[in-house]
Amino acid sequence: QQQVKQSPQSLIVQKGGISIINCAYENTAFDYFPWYQQFPGKGPALLIAIRPDVSEKKEGRFTISFNKSAKQFSLHIMDSQPGDSATYFCAASIPGTYKYIFGTGTRLKVLA
Amino acid sequence: SAVISQKPSRDICQRGTSLTIQCQVDSQVTMMFWYRQQPGQSLTLIATANQGSEATYESGFVIDKFPISRPNLTFSTLTVSNMSPEDSSIYLCSASPGSGGETQYFGPGTRLLVL
Image (cartoon, rainbow over all chains, first blue to last red; front, side, top):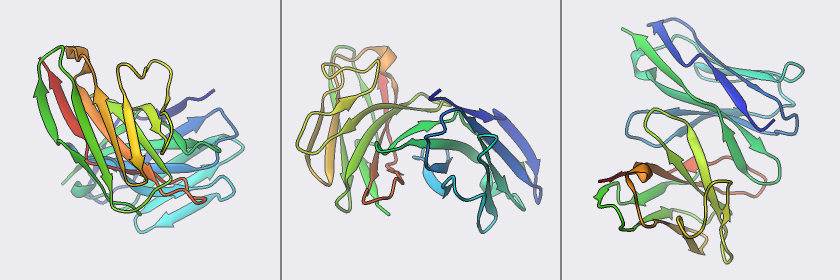
C-alpha cells in the first residue's frame, strides 16, 4: 500500500515531442506528490509538485495531471529538448512525516 | 528552498573501515533525511535525522551500521560502519524546511566504492 508504481522504465522521444511519465499509488492518505529530475552524477532536483485537491499544475513546459479517483498522476514535458534527457522520479509524501515514497524512475532520452 | 552540500563527494574505502559523510544546509531546516541510491535505481530512505534526539531508522537499516548525528538545524552526518562491498552506493542527504511544506531538497550525493 506504500508503493508508488512508475512507468515507463525508459522513454525515447524526438526533440519537440511530448514526454509522458505515469505514476500510480494505493494509499489515499498521501498528500503531496513531487516530481524530481536527476542528471547523472547529481542529486535529484525538484521539478514540480502537486497536492491532491488540484487536478493540474503547469510550470513552463512541465505539467502535472492528477486523477484522484484513479489514484494516478502524470508528468508531461511539452516541447521536449535534448537537455531534458535525465531520470525522472515521482514521489508521494506520507502525511505528518515529511517522508517520501519514490517511484522506480524513468530514464528519458530526447533525440536531437 | 535550501542549498545542500555534502562531503566527501566520492570515496574509495577498504572493507571493514568506516566513512562519515557530512551534510550541510544553508538555512535552518526542520527535517533532514538520508537516502541510499544504487546506480540506476530509485532512492531508498535510510533514516530521518532528528535534531536533538536519536535518528529514526527505516526497516532494514540499523543504528549500529548507519549511526547518524544531527547536532543542530543545519548539519547532519551519516557514518557507514564496518563497510563491505555491498555498501557501495550513492548516499544522499535531503532537507525539508518544514513549516507546512513537505518539499525535500537534495544534496549532490556521496559516491562510495568499497573494495
